[in-house]
Image 1 (tube, helix red, strand yellow):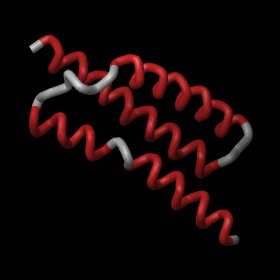
Image 2 (spheres, one colour; image 1 turned 45 degrees about the horizontal axis):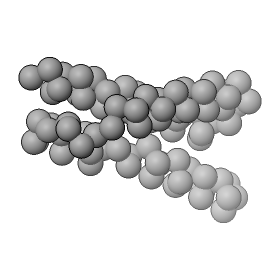
Image 3 (cartoon, one colour; image 1 turned 90 degrees about the vertical axis):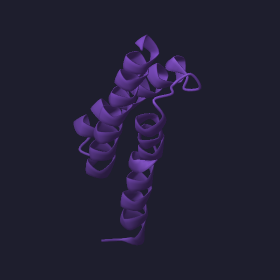
Image 4 (cartoon, helix red, strand yellow; image 1 turned 45 degrees about the vertical axis):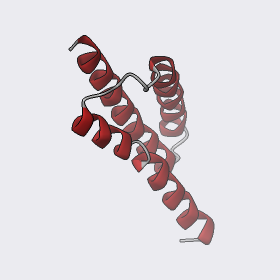
Amino acid sequence: MHVSDILGWMGCTLLTVNIIPQIYKIHITKKVEDVSTTFIIINISGLVMYSIYAWYNNILHIAISTTISSLFSIYLLFLKCIYTLN
């Protein structure tokens, strides 16, 4: 494995887990007023498109990370909807 592959996996890992602190904070505080719905929707759209591209072109590290990131963002949108209604 080349250094560029290691950097690719590390970068994808960091970009995948970067949303976890926000999800954790929402779970603790139950506050979502400062989270932008537009941001979440654009983020999901971009991640899904990038994921399709990566799977189609067999770019494994990007395909895996964007798919997981998409799921995290969808969960964030779910939390936004749930806690906005309450």
